[in-house]
Image 1: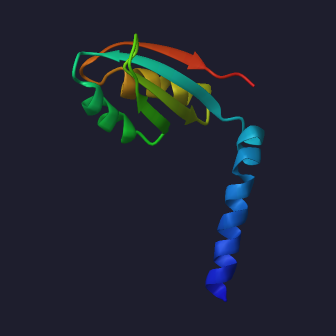
Image 2 (image 1 turned 90 degrees about the vertical axis):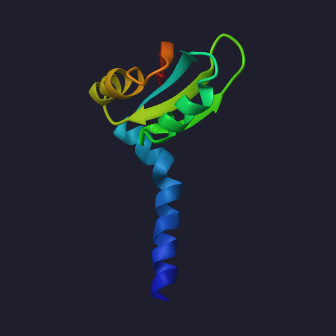
Image 3 (image 1 turned 180 degrees about the vertical axis):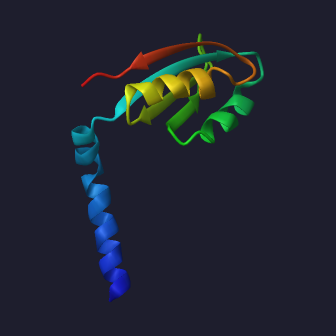
Length: 101
């Protein structure tokens, strides 16, 4: 019985997550990343370890990876970009696309 109540609470929280994020005002962005040839999978693995990164895909074309990430504040976003993502070895360039509501 207790496990059922806990499961219902978690279910309700997940249903409310999009509403809570819009009220809280999460900062969201996408980043286009170019890396050294053959380093896509290595960088992908490193990016997936960063908690703020919600999705990461390897692509073909002008950019090698597309990353979606979220932070609570603009300051946190700047910190993630400059101290966690752009400092990874083998990244040649990035373009950040901040999402507006």
